[in-house]
Amino acid sequence: MRALAFRRSEGLVLEERSQPHAGAGEAVVRVEACSICGTDLRIASGAHRAYANADGRVPGHEVVGVVVEAGDGAAVGEGDRVFVAPNYGCGRCRYCLRGDVNLCETPRAIGITEDGAFAEYVFLPAELVAQGNLLACRDGFDAGTVALAEPLACALRGSRACRIGEGDTVVVFGAGPIGLFHVALARVAGAAEIRVCEPNVVRRDRSLAWGATAGYADAAEVPDGADAVIVAAPVPAAQQRALELAASGGRVNFFAGLARDRSRVELDTNLIHYKELVVTGTTASTNDECRAALDLIFDGLVDTASLIDARFDLSSAREAFELAGSGRALKVVIEP
Ligand SMILES: [Zn+2]
Ligand SMILES: [Zn+2]
Image (tube, rainbow, N blue to C red):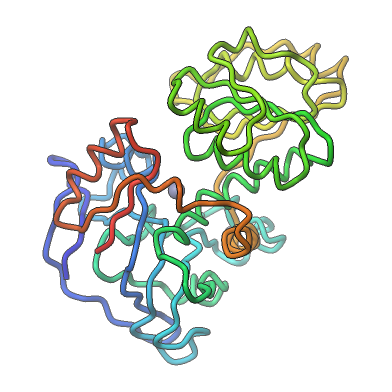
């Protein structure tokens, strides 16, 4: 089979591999679609920590496909069309036991610590299958559209941390795919005002089409008094501004991680103290959030299809990554 592997010297390279097979408890999925994530761009550039010693590993963690092999005891059948929730854990640590596999002390993920789905087939380890990460894909849905349940699930975890309610005012920094998901989730949660701060005019306008009620190019122009503020842009100044924009009792989510050399940020903690703010951070997602994200897509509440600006097959992967990295497209999908 063909697979797009990370090579330290050259970045991502299309290689010929032997097709994986499933033993007891394991599964093999023929990949229909795998979308490119910011994480994959970091991997391709050689900047991802998990790939520091990963010569030859295959990225790709936003996956929909059909089970072609299911080993004895695997809780899935051949021919099943599935979305693969990529994160799984040891199953034994206190985080795994309470359902937060994304916080596992030894976290594992398809396309991050294990070979992923920028390939014709992806091998799914027994632990992942046993932890219930293969979620049924409803008939009649395009694979790329459903694969976007993965980033949507991450956004959902951040949105839930902000406990957005009916009539709330919400501010979202950033109108990339994740920022747009936050707009959609705020709308679904009943927010009355959704203000988006995004310097790129194309993206800002797109957020208005997604349900934002106002767009701002400059953070200084955003009115204060927000019940929830979500920072979905890797910008230290936006984290500082978020505390100012929050109303008393407001919830803040630092959704985007910052570059390692820029993650020490001076915050006015008196804003947290005197306004009784709840400042949260979230990372990745759990199976529970993936399931909820799939339902949002299947029920037509979040239009992930409209985020897909281009589709490529594996042989055009280089072009796909160039487009995804250019900022000209929101989501680019590879269909092996
Ligand atoms: Zn992703
Ligand atoms: Zn664990």
